[in-house]
Image (tube, rainbow, N blue to C red):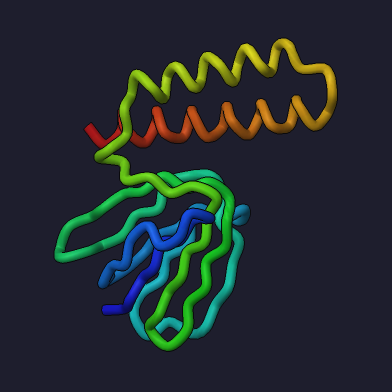
Length: 132
């Protein structure tokens, strides 16, 4: 077992005692078990899966960084959300808003923001639909 802290810019989202964690990274999914060697890696928009108390718990995350050393893990991400709490209607509305912004954006920075918002919304929708 190891200690896992899920942290956003708002502060600590959750502190968990975990048996494993599986993370989305730019290179694909990566798993970490207790006593893993020290590691730091970027985290991509996707779903983090944590084995906790004998059951799998899932969280959507946006881009961030994961650090592990001495059986203490820290996941820093712009946004973390428990898949169980996702409101599918709100997620679909966010997707529609992001698609609208993407169609109406002219500046590169606005296009990039709209693309990221769209990826986050689609991630939340897929996570919730695949969890039910």
